[in-house]
Length: 125
Image 1 (cartoon, rainbow, N blue to C red):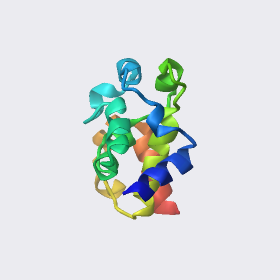
Image 2: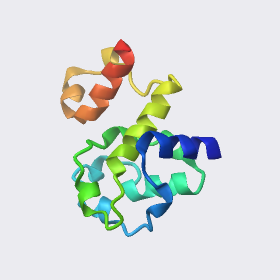
Image 3: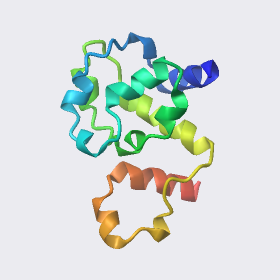
């Protein structure tokens, strides 16, 4: 498990243990209402060696990398980079969350853009 935590830190370039769970990232996130776990909880899952729980959450795909969390973080942690690192690790495992061909057009219009971008990257890579 430690190698997964190290991989997240390497890919993101962030000190995962610098977060002291103030919740400002979650409090300012414009997409939090769609997430199954809060952004600060994602970091906590990684800190407590529950990386698979973070990787299996919807939150890492809903994060739009708008950097609101980064701007609000008193510790200067770039949570958007951590979310991207988690998405990359998940994609490297080659596990699909959705098959874009099976999603109805009305649902596509409701999906966060980063979910579509992540899926298209995987399908075309």
